[in-house]
Length: 401
Image (cartoon, rainbow, N blue to C red):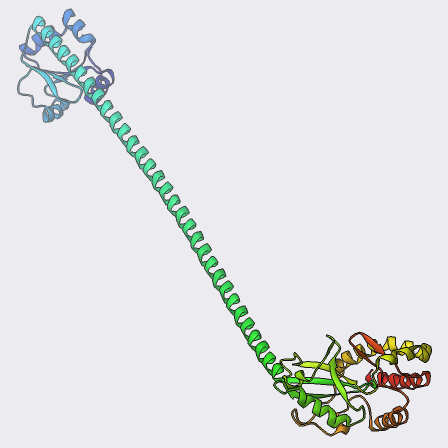
């Protein structure tokens, strides 16, 4: 029999490392102890215990036996203790037994140990399976937790994207609303301004239509102006002209150049507004005395100056018409009542007017006036008269400019 040489703790360590049964044999000095030791020394017993037991002998009177008996009570000497891997006694033999019985006991312990080993391995396998299952469950829980976190993150990102989209849509709606309000405000402001402009334009038109500014052009090229209510009759304007020029031109009629129109006696009872002479107009005085159809024959007697005077007269008339607007004459003190003749003339001074009157008196018997009417040109002047008239026109044109 191969006994373990060493202490009990070392023997226990060796048995655990080799997965053997730890055997403690306690003997004394009596006959039964000697018989028990003889059974253990048997070859068959030694062979049975060789591959399954770590055996150690302990003297019943030793300190080691006393320490061992504190854990496993020793009630009989000799005794044999078979202890498993986990410290549980598998078999206890009290007293002396034969070698054959001891062999049976060792084989039974061995089978029992194998069964326990199988159970232990099964338990170990079950424990491993349980741990593996736990690990798999833990891994599964971790994976599920991770997937849930990812899903929550995706949902959070989607919520953020939706919120951003809603914010953008809200900002776009607010911007569109602001733009629409600004556009509506601008349109309302433009409409208000347009309405104000239309109102001012209408007021100005009414104001202009209430007053008619009439410029009267005399046959000698001079002119004067006056303001009349637009509802005044043309007869009142003619009376004003008569007060201004007196009998200088004798009997005369009134006409407009643009468009060409000579007013009749029926037009004298019509208002200036009805005759489209408001808010402003230019009226030409056409003397009626001495205008005969055969006067056209004398056209060739005037020579080149008469022809030039005839051609330049429309241009001078247009120039005076434009200059009356560019360089308007001072308005008279009253619109309805005619001012004195000396203040009504805006194109000549007192000395020039006296000169024209003198010239007109000297030549009234020998020359008619130059005028246009209904496309016919009447010329009854001599070359000498034309030269005087041209000088007069040039002086008046210089004053107008």
